[in-house]
Structure formats: structure tokens, C-alpha cells
Image (tube, rainbow, N blue to C red; front, side, top):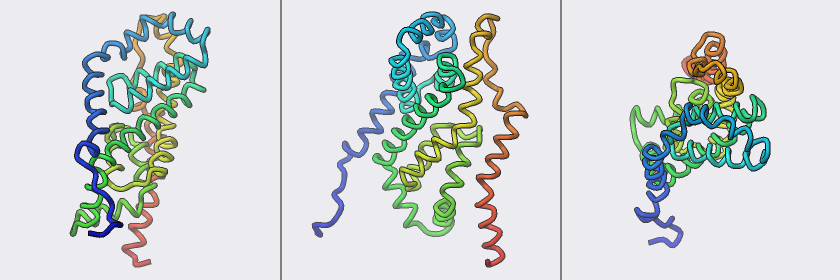
Length: 243
């Protein structure tokens, strides 16, 4: 046996990070569901604003920590956390805080999944034959476009967009950059909704969380997604023409 061979991870070492995320997600769904809700934000709004006014930097750090945990453990309430970012810190810098928290949490899932079984699955896909290998090669050739595409399309669940790249051997820096930039449009929309929660609370209403699917929001997002997909289309056309 060669001394240069890469040591194999034990099953416990390999699956520990992913197991912790799954366990944390299960506990979060059971015990934190009521805390990460619109009602909890509404009922505690005055206390939250008072704490922010007295401890701005600490509030930012606590908020970022909570947001990272929510995303990393796929807990219920990610949308509420985004609204809270707008409510507490306005559209800006609230959007920036939301994007940073979401990117760090997404990266944690990405690394845990890759450490657990992403490397193995990626190697199997790379060594496969036929249609599966062609699909993987197509994704590899258009990684930047595909990564931005899954972030910009509202129909792709956030946790799915975190897991799939880990199975396809996407470099960490590409994942982080595409996540940070790709979630900006949607995050700014929901953060701006959160920034207007004061008026919503005063009227006894609930925020319109379907706003991202309204034409004036959805059409620009579709346009951005089309731009992200354009390089893939051009490569396909050139390939057919033999250029």
C-alpha cells in the first residue's frame, strides 16, 4: 500500500458534521418553531427595538449568529429572520446582514454535506458512464452559470441549492461567491418588506410574503436568471455548429 494514499475517513468522522446538522434541525423544529414566527416578532417588537437602540453592535452580532444557525440547521423561520433583519436594521444595512448570515449558514451545510458524502458521490459521478457523466460534465463546464441560476430562480429551495453543489465537486470559493451575489435580489426584496413591518404591525395585518412572485419583482428576477443561463445556451449552440 502506498504511503501517499489519502487516508480514509472513518464513518463516524465522515458523518458527524452532517449528523449534528440533522440533529440540530430536528431539535430546532420541535423547540424553536414558535419562537421563529411572525407572531413572536410582532409580540416582542418593542423590546427588540429598545434592545437594538441600547446595544446596536451586540444586536447585530446576535442577529447574525441566529441567522447563521437558522440557515445552517435548516430551521423554520428563515423568512422571518430575513424580515427581522429589515425590521431591526432597515433595508440597508439589513440586507447586508441577511446576506452575510445566509452565506455563512449555507457554507456550513455545503461543507458538512461534502465532508459527509459529497466527495464520494462526486467521485462516483465523475467515474460513471453514459448520460449521468454527460450531465455532470455539462454542469462542470457551466458551474458559474448554474450556481447563479439556482440562486436566482425563486422555485429552487434554498437548502437544495446548498446541497446539490456539494455533490458536484464545486469549489468552495465558487459556492461562496455565487451564494453571496446570487441571493442579493431576493434578499433585498424580503428585507424591504421587513423594513415596512412597523406599519404592518400598526394596522394589525401580516406581510405579503408572496411579493417575490408579483410581476414587477418576478420578471426582473427571471431576466437575471436568463442572463445567468445565457452562457450555457451559447455553448450549446456553438457545440451544435461545431464552432
